[in-house]
Image (cartoon, rainbow, N blue to C red; front, top):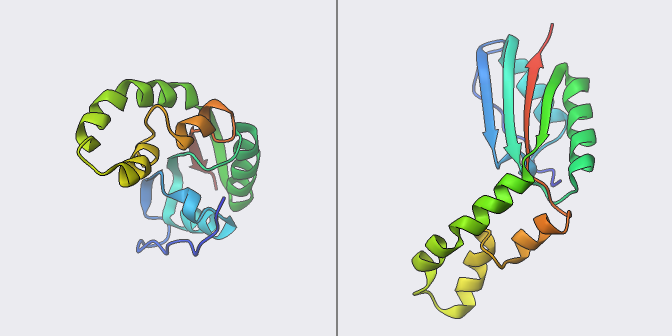
Length: 142
């Protein structure tokens, strides 16, 4: 997981009922990010996060859950949704190929990976277990 500076959420303390992060936290997930989530959520507030950092599922589950729990969030669900994502990528490949088929070959390869087409290095990372896609739900308990 990369650790860039986590965003400072422009929300008052204890003000959010729910915070949703989709395919963004892998850029800045850290104890500081978890603390910022805790600060902004109301007691009983919910964090929903979905992402796919380049790490096996169990590594993600252990590291992310531990970091959130140290910050005061109770992880209630941490699900591996990789197989559904892979199936969606495979089914969407013909549609995506139709959209990028006009591009020069050298850039088309980049788009194949970015869009997780079949075949692509990103899809391979899911299939080989080097990357997993998770969906989690955590609650602020105080």
